[in-house]
Image (cartoon, rainbow, N blue to C red; front, top):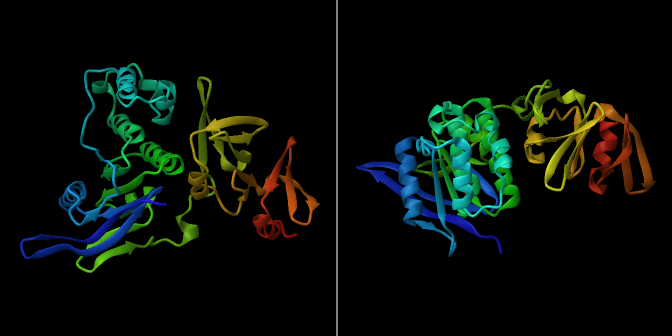
Length: 319
């Protein structure tokens, strides 16, 4: 049975003014919603959730709050702090994997007081990644962040949605930032909770065709244009790309890639794969409802096609 956090007649007032009123909203496991609000209203929402004031929380569920203003121990080296956090949370994660996840490999031996603000923000995300709490409240997590830091947070949220049963609420005054890491996005007012719709048409909201994807390979960082990628595969909880005849591990989830890749160039024939349509050399028919894809310059791998995706693939290939 799915659990959820429920706002029931959720209301707040400031003097004679209504901040929000009679909000009825449910947040389910494996969901990350956004709420647009100023800092004052964010604090009210967080306080009411913690106190379970007009909020119903499943039994035995705990709450974690990520506040982007909190700074970790400044005198510790970054790597030592990660060791400390892994021990504190009794986590089996490896320090090297955490450094890669947070894109902090180059600063591992620096004192936290010496890292830049973007690195510090990414380090703050570690507590979100490690917490055992079931309900996570993220207050302004993307404020004043660059693209790399935004990607790290989106990647962490995707991993938590994919591999845990957390319920997450992102609070921000910036609707564009909310749309990057949460869905749907709401604004609370005297009429209740209203959804904020993306103002851009779906195709325009996607990344441009010349998206770059980077990965670490040994002591090098390799950058690919998506056009160079033959196909992408989810393999044992890792995502691998095949490009220029080689295989590389990347720090993206398939869900993230779905929002990045150009849909006119890439197709998802199976839940574990994306293929570059330009790299398809043959569509192999084994039976009426069984097909595989043969790709150029990748002779030893056949990509499966799910039965439900066969018609759409044939349409893409004009078959």
